[in-house]
Length: 433
Image (tube, rainbow, N blue to C red):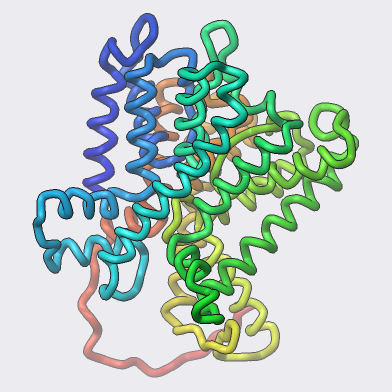
């Protein structure tokens, strides 16, 4: 928590400098908000990065995105490698907690793997995007756009620099009918949000010919959510003249698929969320809150958490006392933690949205969407972020920070841990439901 706060403070100072803006200056509140949004790989911003910030400011934002995407603990492995210092027990424990893995063995190898995979995928994305953007924008501008977009997209950040002073907040919406750009960007989003250990296991699949229960769970839930999101968007928005209505059939399906992908906490809006039907917006908020997978660049309560909850519900309905997933029995503490993460996240979103409604004069639906988007580090907005008051900006800043460090981290830090009870109490059953 303190490490991410320190990174955000450093980013705030750099973005506050006059050299970071193309013209005029950046207020301290806006600098803090954007630094938090970049470090939390969210993408919400009251200022258009392409129209407001200079190349220096854009480089600062990109550095914060990269650091926030791979995690500070993983990036620190590079520092230790270059300085030839040994990562002690405390450092390994930090890596274990940051990566969300239950075992300490192999955390250094996993951290190094995360960095290698990140750079490799971002490099491929950069080349693929450059093939489209360089002919259109010229060599220098096209390469910079491609590099920024490849890193921002893989890290599920949602930032872009396509806007200009004349046309702010343009984004990638002009490419909503471009199948090539849609597929490249969607692939980067999925790879960034699917979990690095899963990518490592898939890379070794040809040699081992088997997948762990964890990988199967994440792949199943991710594919299911993408399918549900795509079908929901396609069915509900098919004739909406402001979204999918004007597009031909093939492009409608591509646009619906991309919209479902970007809800994995990427926050890249090819279709304006404010133009969606109310039903689609409700479904979108649910998908945003679930988010990406653990040990990835995305946020939310995580697909594996949602998968454990669904398995617990299914087995409970079938009268089973023990929860099973793909031939493995889940540890009770795993189920308890999944329930706790989800409960804390839902309560946090509800409480923060109510506080936000007390300081902002806007419909509650827009405030709830903004809160979910910030907490799940998505970055999609119903055109509310640029109009937020100073108090509203600070509330959303805190929400993005909390969402990035994890729903339980802040609560765990504030709640004193009790010593194990020496007494085992009698079991008592009470009616439920």
